[in-house]
Length: 376
Image 1: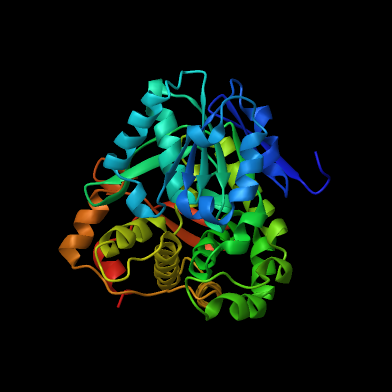
Image 2: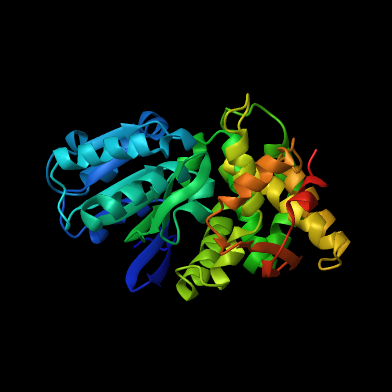
C-alpha cells in the first residue's frame, strides 16, 4: 500500500469496515470483494467525467465485462426514491446477484445512500463497497453504515444500518466537483470538526481567507480551478473521517454518542425536504449549515454556548459561501415535518445543541416556535 494512503479500520455491529484514503484507493477493491465480479451502481456525472479511471478500477476485479454489470443513474436527492429502488432491485435480479455477491456504489452521498440500501435489502443483505466522489460523501455520508431513501415528503425515513466492507476515497475525484458541492461538503467538515476535532476546527478557521477566495463566490456549477493544491484537503478529509469512524465504532446503532453527528441535521433535514419543490432546493450541506447556525443561536441565547463561539462558527460557515438563514415553513408545516423525524422517540424529538467546539448536548429539546425566531 502506498505510503501516502490512510487506512482506518472499523468494526460496526460485528462487521469489519475499512476506510481507505489515497490516490490509488480504488485499486484496493479486489481485497474487499469476496466473490468477484461485483455489480456497479454509478453516478452518471462521475461516469462521464472520470471514465478512464473508473475503467481502470473496474478492470482490477477479474470476471465478466464490467460495462455489462454497471447501472448508471442520475445523482441528486431525486435518486433516493422508492421507484428508483425498485428499478435497482429489478436490475439486481436480472444479474442474479447472490448473497455472496458485492454491489459497488460510486458517487456522492445520495447515490451511496441508495446503493447501500439496495445492498442491505437485496436477498436480506449482500456485500457493499462505497467509492465516494464528493467531499460530503468522503467525510460523512459513506462512513458508518447508514443507508436510506426519501419518501412521503420526508428525508431518509426508510433505511437500515448496513456497513460497507470498504470505503475507498480518492481526492482526485474532487477535481471536477462543482463549487456548490464543495460548499455542501464544507458544512459536514465543519460539523465534524465542531463535534470531535477542535484542532481541525482551528485549522479551518485559520484558513478562512483561502476558503473564502475559493468558495464564497464564483459559478455554483463549475469546478474550482486548482483547489486541491491550495489547501490540505487530504489531511482534512482524513482527520474528519477518523472522527466519524471513532464515533460509529463506539456507537454503531446511534444509542447516544452517535447522535452528536446530527448537529444541524434535525432542522436541516426539514428545510431540505420542505425546499425540495421550490425554485432552488437546498443542498444537504446548505440545509445543515442553516440548521447549525440556528442551534448555535439558540444555544447562545440560552447561555449554553458562549456567544463569541456561536458567532465565529456562523462566520466560518458564511466564509465558505454557505447560507445561515432561509425562508421558514409555517409553524404547522414545521411541526408536521419535525414529527416525521426518525430521531423522535415516543413524543419527544431529541436535539443536538452545541456547548463549545468539542462538546455538544445530545438530549436537548427545542420548540418549533423557537426555531422560527432564527429563520427569515
